[in-house]
Length: 491
Image (cartoon, rainbow, N blue to C red; front, side, top):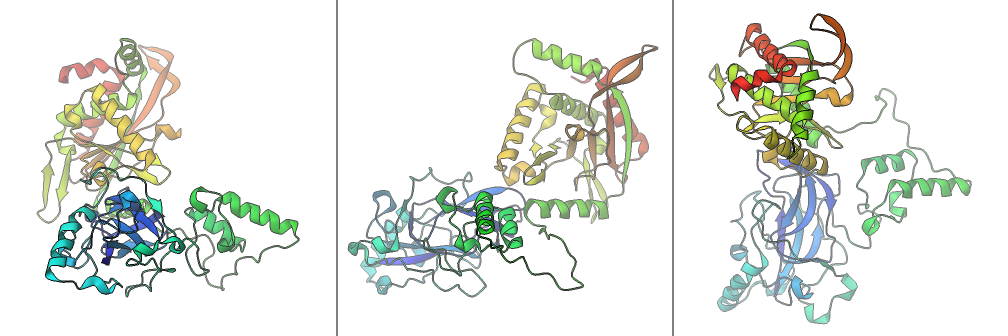
């Protein structure tokens, strides 16, 4: 016998309450294994693959790509039965599941993996012996795991696609519907079948492609995508426009908005961009910040780095040297490694330095955090910066990689600018900004010379200290940049 189990968007941790569907990894009719990733979602913290704790046949999907889903909303339904398993090409999982024997966490309102006994099969009510057998089989068809990289089992074998028309007669106990079932109450979308109906979602990931089609009146449902698994690309829309022009037909333009409506492209503030907007707005509302800056001669720091890398061993990055200078400065001025508890009206001085650094990615600005930066040397800092930067570019940073910072280092010199007044990364108390290093005329040892000069800016929370402390911190950083030997006193 078979059951259709409902898999809901799980609790993603870190207080996150919603996620946006970026890309579906399975379609209706696909056979999935236990813990196989079924959908890629983007939260305010990171991009993650969500694995399904059930093994069986996907019978419905809820939500189009680009849709925001609250935690606990249905993602898909999976038919789990006794007629086969994903490993051997059957159309169902390794055993019938009952509500109490799924192997997942105990279902509750909005809990991830809570099973829904919405099976269309009449075999759901068996004898007590049959129920025991179902419970025993359930453990091999469900894991209860949630996110890839957070305790899931080994990666499953590659899925096989099963079309509704080719379901074997022996598996008739688990029928695969020709279309997705009606959406449950709560506003979920209908399923996305392989042979899409006009009202279904289209295989488009990029919002730029959707906008190009919308502005030029192109019906995406009439296009055949040239991307992987029929994904519609920008080139497909442009080819359709050229073909229409060659036929002497121009698609109808998008409707002109009514008078009084603000013209322009609307970009939703959600995901990473929305989280950044909320945090920066809160920082401006709550923190009375002030900024001071100084120019420094970085010539000797660059020479020191060149000498260190010429001595052999792993290369040391300039960012790692600046980070090492920051941790030494925070040891001398610990008030700046703190946070403010508004309810208790207290400044909380922190013992560990968890150093955040700004990284610009295609998804927007993110601030990965180097844990225990105060206990790392330049080589260890270099390696950790490289690891987190690569993860940021690949979109694989975990929520733990993006939270818990106590101080931020912002190297905006990579954008070719000299100075800035950065906004403090709430709830931290300070941020050091580093501009580009460029040759400039400079008085060195009483004579005019061309030196490598950098502008350092320091923004601090005026509640945790006064200008004397902030100026002392920045002056110490500048002294270490100009004379790296100053660091030897603290090593």
